[in-house]
Image 1 (cartoon, rainbow over the protein chains, first blue to last red):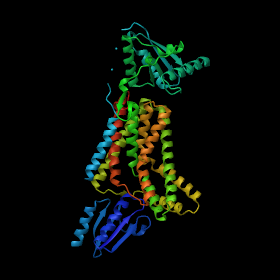
Image 2 (image 1 turned 90 degrees about the horizontal axis):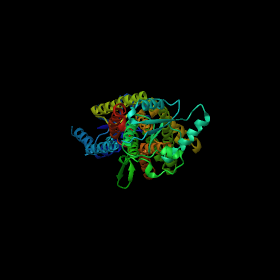
Image 3 (image 1 turned 45 degrees about the vertical axis):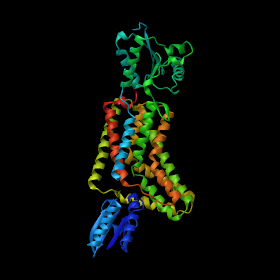
Image 4 (image 1 turned 180 degrees about the vertical axis):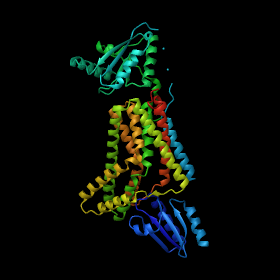
Length: 88
Length: 407
């Protein structure tokens, strides 16, 4: 599974969510973990059509987007998403 | 669990806010009752009070004595002003000309509104039944004023553990300053700049630089907010007592309250608690400016950059939280608090407005770690702010006596 995480330096929710995603990626041995900055990686971010809320976590399996998590979520909720996707 | 904490947090803030309001609660002497009426010819409320006093029934046996402080006869005006200052000293009120200023027996009244009308009647009726001291006459006669000559509203004082005996009005306004300042501060409008600054500075590991840049940013933000609020209060004071202005502000409060609650409902339906990326172009421009400032070799130029940035951002983002400072300024203005009290209340408001920023800043400087405050707080700040605005709007429009804390 591949993860694309879009955050911004100024975003408080991103400060909360970024370590959560990083930890879960580590736990689930996801090495393909790409972090994009909303301001610095403008072109890449625009191509992903992320809408108006940050952070955005896009989960990709076999070159297809399978899940998009937007905004702040509890650890147990994203943990469940990771687990479900791992078992698919 | 989190929901319970948020629920308790909202309940606490609302309780604190409601506790600042207190439900309103009301005595034949053949002696003529002197109404000493200090006024100016240009003051709108003086004209309103004069009409009111002259409309009072004859059985009250009133004698209105006029003290015109901008009389065409300069000597007379000066004498009236001097008397005003002597009376102000006796009643322990600020020594500046405030009109209308009325003294009946041992009771003084600053300003004129519905609540003051009923207060005047209360004392006039009381003095019809009991003996009273005409304090102004005693001052004119150069007699010594006994503390018991001055009327003290015992109902307006309460005993609070740790604080002791406190004036309900002052305490109510203090609570409102704390609650409104805090709710206003949780609004994330200007916080993102601080977060950005801290996050960019932390990798440098330079605590001094974080202290200096972050500290200057917060200090300038505080001064800017303070100046804007004081300027607004002074503007409001000129027109505050005019009924039409109170109606406009009340209607504004209802509108702004409704909008905030709409924002809360919208974000609740969306179920996406995150950072809003509206106006990304402007945000990117500001972000780039911050990067330049941080990389600036000259500390002096960098500080000028930080100061400019703080003023610019707070100015742009003022619209984001304009509602609460405007309403707080209105509350101070209609309560006729002294200039010194205004300063203190606004300082308290600004302190609580910056409280969350100060916490984040302190953690960052001591631990070199940036922490984020959940945007869920921002969502709930819309709810609490919206409810407060609706309450203040309803009070201003329909129950102004309650918000003037004259019980």
